[in-house]
Image 1 (cartoon, rainbow, N blue to C red):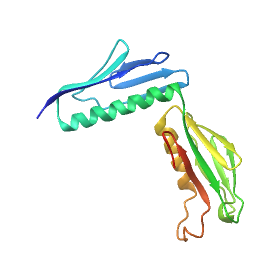
Image 2 (tube, rainbow, N blue to C red; image 1 turned 45 degrees about the vertical axis):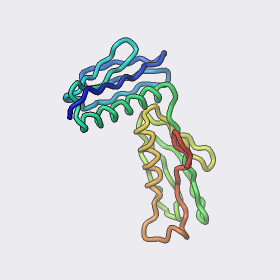
Image 3 (cartoon, rainbow, N blue to C red; image 1 turned 90 degrees about the vertical axis):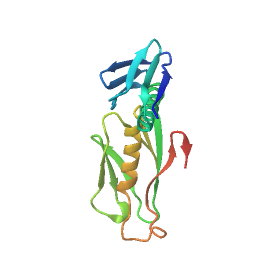
Image 4 (spheres, one colour; image 1 turned 180 degrees about the vertical axis):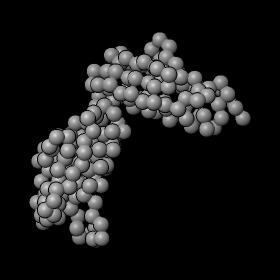
Amino acid sequence: MRKEIFQNIKIPEGVETNIEGNTIIVKGPEGENRKKCKTAGLIFEKKDDKIIIGSKKATKKDKRMINTISSHVKNMIRGVQEKFEYQLKVCFSHFPMTIEIKNKELLIKNFLGERIPRKVKIPEEVDVKIEKDVIKVFSCNKELAGQTAADLEVATKIKKRDRRIFQDGIFIIKKPGRET
């Protein structure tokens, strides 16, 4: 059964939005976010201080798409007001691991006694700060910040060893919205 479903997203003061075709651009005090959305069959427009996403004859699939796009837009608006922050902890038991940043690349040295450093590329829109054994990842784009934090965690994943004994690595300890 098809229904009329619309979502209204309020644009706060200090945030500027533009809709160009199926791309939404959000600008704020912390930066700028762009996202290309699949809007086939959906109404996607800006009126006054609201963004309206919806359809007059929406199916279940359209409803899911409307809710997903509205969540992305809300995250984009929140990100340009206040950057998303992920915190990671550097843990080691025997071999002291060192972390440093060179040319938008994070080097993980002496992981489990390895001679060749492991490298993780940092995207341009992401800021990384190292404070002793805590790595902080900042970005106004939630997806990029989360992916960078996940890349750091995966770079020190241990294979073919017992995780209960070899507990060295970099682990996410704080995410936006909840602490783990």
